[in-house]
Amino acid sequence: MENTIDKKINHLLKNSSILGTIGSPSSTIELALDVLESSVTRQLVGELAIFKYLQDSKNHYAIGQIIEIALRNFLLEDPTIKSVARKRGTVNPISGIQDVHVGKLLCSAIFTSSEDLIEPSLLGTVPPTGTYVYQVNDNILSTILEKQKKSLFYLGNSYGSKTKMPMWFKHFDYGEDGAGEAYHLGIFGITGSGKSTLAKMILTAYSKFPQMGLLVLDPVGEFSKSFANDYNHNMDRNYQNYASDFSMKKIIDSVNKEVLSINVRNLVLDRWTLFEEILLQSQFFRQLTINGPNRRFAVDSLMPKLKKKASLNNLIKREYFDLLINELRNDEVQILIFSTPEPRKRLNNLVSTLDQKNLDYLYYQFWIPICSLFENRQDALTIDDLLEKFSWKQKPLIVIDLSEQTAHKMQLKYWNETIQSLILKRLLRGLVSLGEKTWQKSTSLNTLVVLDEAHRYARKDDFTDTNLEQLRLTLLDAVRTTRKYGLGWLFISTSLSSIHRDILQQLRIIFFGFGLSLGSDLVTLRELVADEKAIDLYRTFTDPASSFNTKTRKYSFMTQGPVSPLSFSGSPFFFNALSPDVFIKENNLYKT
Image (cartoon, rainbow, N blue to C red; front, side, top):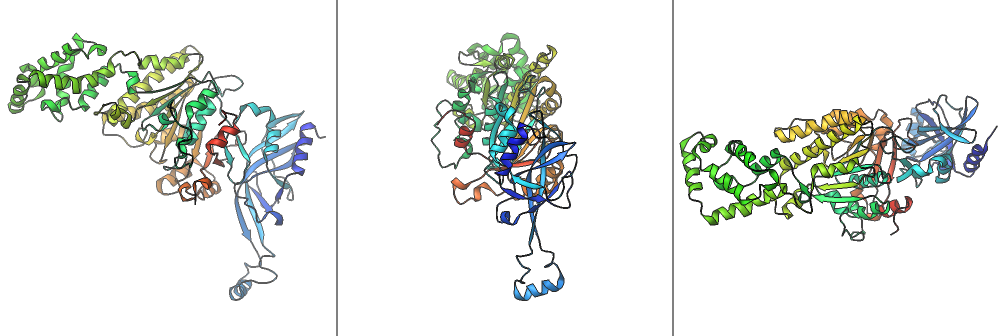
């Protein structure tokens, strides 16, 4: 007996296009679709389809994507007919008339209706051949997912149609909208595949939850630009820079989420190891003819005296600079730096003859820019104070710009990847420590960390640089251990195969953009996505840069994991990302 929901769905199905019928052979894994003659000229690959069937005396509705269309003409496969076709081109009445179009339908979600409720189920039997398969539209999905309406979010349309692909992003704590644990996510694709834009959409989805914190570690400044207060949303209306077309500050403000966009000048660094490494990477010692490994010897011999006399936040005072110079004039210190007399003599002659002008030059050009990063400043936060915001009841979205370009604008000419890795390591270890403290109190940190350009730090191969290697190991350990703390990670990378295997195995939700269909990336993709037909469909993605104009440009993704109510069976599905304006409209964000 049909209930109210069954009647609604049946009414919608009767008014929907019939794509075909269930054919043979079919299984609970993959169903054959005999395409109707009226639909053979339609674009069917990637289209969402639905069929109704009976299982355990209950009406069930299976939704999936058409991942392949094959053409068969069994008469033309006969060698004799083939030879006729070779001579004549067409064979009447066989060519075109006896063609059969067969599709492959990959079911990703099964629903059953019970007492006016829609519940998830599974495909436990194969429906009979001849079962009608209908095109899914927004009305059908809205009816089936009516109870989940408030949780739905839209990032794109189904790959083969204009039907909106419903998704959901749950915070990492318990409750009606919570997942009860942290998820690790990944977004992969070559440069220009739409990764950053998709990440910003996902950040927007999570920003709906005031109790969820978001931290973006931005090593190249991509995200910081779109979170700037003075960002002009209309600066690039031709979508040539698709990722930059988001004014994220305005979007996040519209969902009442506090946003902090900061750079290294807004951070008070708080570790002696950071100071030592930055001093090593700067030109300070080179000005004193101390080069190569001798710079490390200089730091190791000078720091003990400085640590006894000064604290990090007052190192900027002239008296401590003078203390360091005086130490360099000490014969015992010079012996620790240089083992041979010639370079010692050169150093001694230099530091002994430094006049006030040269001392002022060293102090103002090198010592102050370095020490200012460790000074308590009115407009800056210590790293501990910054991370402490993620223990608040209402957590912010914080973007930290660690890009070399921004550092150079601030006259931090010594900035490089090693210093960047040191600050990242300090942030990550602080987060993990905070997560452990909250877990011991039986609460959840409920925070997602976004790491752009993840292949720089989370690669599978060891680093020769000790600091980068320590950062890599910190990331690996964090991914394995922080899920129970409510601390999740979102890795964004242009390469799939270069990311450490342990990280890839821990990812719960993955988005694959264009450009991973060659070489080692394809091998890794096949390890993560078992369905070869899905891989074949992914390989048909077109390069967004190959479109004739920017208006027709499409950013396609294959995704795997519990990111949608249509994907709980674990099967991958495909979508084209929405343009910024459509994304804002479909998700009822601020009005442009």
